[in-house]
Image 1 (cartoon, rainbow, N blue to C red):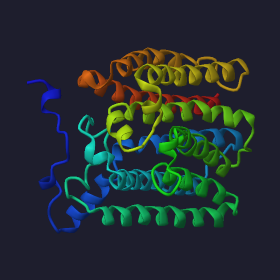
Image 2 (image 1 turned 30 degrees about the horizontal axis):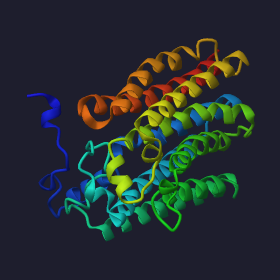
Image 3 (image 1 turned 45 degrees about the vertical axis):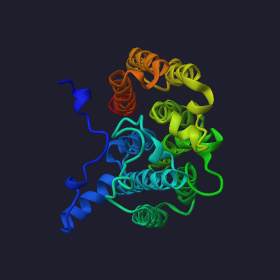
Length: 326
C-alpha cells in the first residue's frame, strides 16, 4: 500500500482526546499548525544575522523576544484563518484538501476545538505577541510597535474582518510582507542595522519564498474557496497562471540574490543554492499545472516549497555569518 493511500485526510479526534493538562496543551499547540512555524522563525533568524553583521554584536535577549513574538503572530494567523474559513464555509466544503498542508487544521470540523475556542486561542496568541512587543518596546523604543502592528493586521485581515484580503486577491502579498519583509527588516533593525535599500533587498527573496508557500497551498483548495467567494490568486488565475506566478516568484528571488552578489553585498557563492533550488521550483510549478488530480505529486510539490523556503533562509543567514567570520 502506498504512502499516499494511507495518508490521513483529517486529524484523529481520539489522538487529542482527554482532559489532562498535557492533552489540552497538545490540542492548542497542534491547532496552530506548527509545521508552518519555520515560515516565520527563519526570517527572524536571517534578519538577525544581517543585523549582527552590520552591528558587530548580537543581542540574544532581543532576538528571542522577536522570534517568539513573530511565531505567535503566525500561530494566531493560522488559527484565525481557520475561524474565518469556517465562518464562510470553505473548509467544510473542501473535499480536495491535502492534510495537514491545506484546508486548515480541521480541528473545528472534527470537533476537536469549537469555533469559539479557536477564536479565543487566536486572540490569546495575539495578546501574547503584543506583550512580547511591549517588552521589545521597553528595550528598543516605540518604533518597534510599527513592525508588530503591521504584522498582526496583515496576518489577521487575510481571512477576518470586513476586508478579507484573501478574497480580494491580495492576501498572498499581505502574507509575503507580514512574514518576509517585516520580520527580516524588523529583526535586523532590533540588532542595530539601519533599514536601507540593501536590507530591503535582502528581505525580498524570503518574501517571495513565503508567498510561494501560500500560493501552492491554495491550489488544492481552489474549488472550495471559489464556491464561497474566497477569491484567492489561484481561484482568479487558474492552474496555468498560478504555475507561472509561482515559478516567477522563485526566479525573482534568485535574481535579487544574484544582483546583491554582483553589488558585493553578499558573498561570491551566494547565488549557488538559490539557483539550484530553481530545479525544485520548476518541478513544483509543473505539479501546480496538473492540479490536484495527482495528489502524490501535488503533496511532494508542497513539501518541496516548504523545503525551498527553509533551505533558502538558512543559506542567506549562513551567507551573513560567513561575512561576519571572513
